[in-house]
Image 1 (cartoon, rainbow, N blue to C red):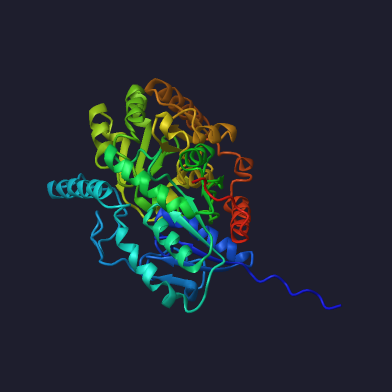
Image 2 (cartoon, rainbow, N blue to C red):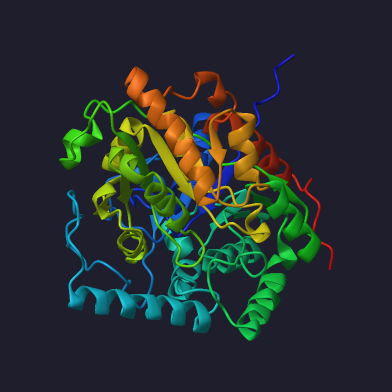
Length: 445
């Protein structure tokens, strides 16, 4: 008897505005899924707005499997102009022109979030819908997975799924119209977004997000079966060069060095309690060195000046991803700024997994009953504190250890068990396989 023919490889289309070679955080989850699915024998194609020359991150699939379709018309992006280099050293205080430009950019982003539906990337909805067939050259998926934000991609995926008559799955790295408090929008705009989101999700096979509280919010609001697939640690080599060498900051065997890498959301992620804690150390404040790498809108400098500890704070501005990793790996402890509010309970920033990979203890300023706080406590990987006095007490403990041993102990390697990307993504392929076979529950209408 002749053996049955093997089942053909499932065909997966990933729709993601962000994708390598772009080095944005939003590109990492869809890129990891693409790489894992390809490794497991899936036939993967990626539809993205990112050009082949728009970054230096490794691309996880062959170029011929990428369908790159640019937004139209092209809109100016807020912030650094094209071709402007990323600074590597400590940034000087912003000039008056720089402050004006930064304020204008913030107003532009705010206006875009308030006026453009569903987001400022709406100019990417029509081009991929119109040009997918030409870019795919006859290839057709069994299932479509879209990752957002931006949520313009959800509209793209829903339109393509309807035209190609295939199921689609929505991946929420963050929430859209409900539960997302990081963008200030009017009540009218939130209502419009919610109505649009409900309409888009009418045809979705399933949703996926990064934590149970977020999954519950989606399911409760839209009646859609929602699964949890956490983000994970991206394996990377240990940097050979220390951050002290790479950014020209002098390290000391008796100085406690803390580092924060990434964006600071004004009014939501506030470094002031930590900076006030340093001021409470009195003479020992000179033994604490706080590194900030990333855009902070002048918040950190203002807090340091107000507390009188500017000598303890170094602002590097934007740095490359590789330099950010070097900073994390060589610090004594890492600072994770989140929003100290119950509405942030389900947020699990991807940065927490970068920090765990560095195996440096984490000081979390944020909601103490949230998912991120629980993860750090359960893994003995850090502490949560929001009161300056409590933070100062922790700094004194770390200072004593540093002065006695020369190094704050690393987080145990066992704390990372089960938290790597590949530990999470097997479940993701099961969800997509069920969707392709029609086995995932449709939303309640």
